[in-house]
Image 1 (cartoon, helix red, strand yellow):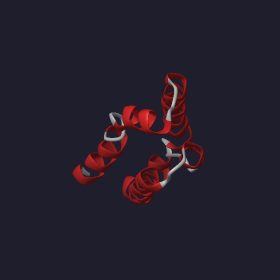
Image 2 (spheres, helix red, strand yellow):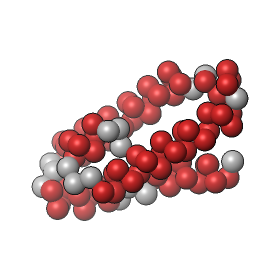
Image 3 (cartoon, helix red, strand yellow):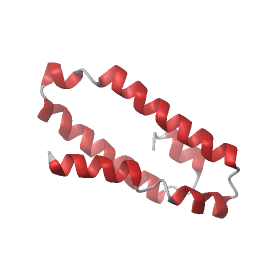
Length: 92
């Protein structure tokens, strides 16, 4: 559980300070960065609303492992994808 929590928190918070660097490098406006954060927040809320109850039905461990794999995959895509549109279309 500690590994799962640390992984999720790392992939959630580590990219945040990088957005100012991405904004400079890729010439994102303040509006673009704000929209990215808004889409992220909406996606988190929507996923909790739609999938939060799955662990009650199937068990925490059965849901936790695929969720961690998806989280790590999203983090890798975030690191290697070179365009904002491509990255956001894959949910990272």
